Length: 315
Image (cartoon, rainbow, N blue to C red; front, side, top):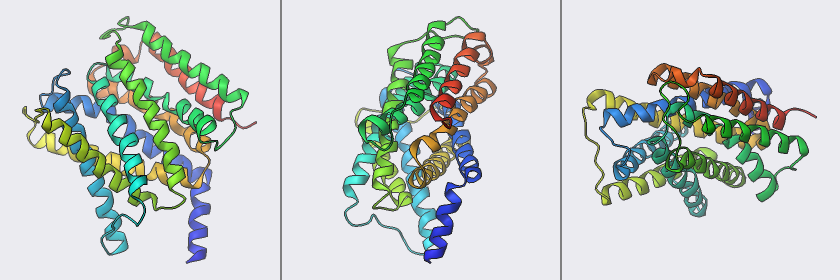
């Protein structure tokens, strides 16, 4: 058993394994942006209907948590319950990773384009490194990391200054792009908390139960405020919710496992694929090719990716 665990740990630190698993995570996360906006259309959710937005988000994450625990229980051949003493960890992760992050992300995305949302999501790499360096002290904040963060934020400033300059542009707002940016702060905080709690508890179990707890909170708030899921969703709406639950279950669980066995910056280097997938899939699925292919957006995406490379490059 000890040798198997050691082999598993070595495999999870192999750069090829990290690349493969992180690539899968980023593709799934990149697809979430257009999937959410398609979901708004299918379920007839208006950008001003915050209650229905929260109900939609909560349904996704409750389903994601159930999928994680069900799969984990099948592999272990018994139902997995939260381990003793894990209540605080599950509560902290549910609050930061699910409730606060996705309140801001879902509301923000209802007021922003898929392309802008995907690019701004790339800032979670910089916030993650700053959080790990300055708050949790997992690693040192070096000059190259500061330069990389500046480059990345320049990219975000550029895409927002572009406003509605590209075809299909929407302009910018604090309620839109601003909220999406705030969501990345909570993403970074939750990532550092995952690394902390992974020392004492199983990452997969924490992921499943925090999703369920956070999802139920979002659903309760949505229902209490009068939210509904209507529209002509039908089979397509159910299939979309199932896919979104699946992508969350797989991506966050894999990412948590990678963070447990690798330094934060070593994993987040692959986060550059997240905005790239998000922009390309938004252009393909939402018809936002005008925004995705204009010079401002492409330059912003280049700066974001360059910043991530500078932050994480070897000395």
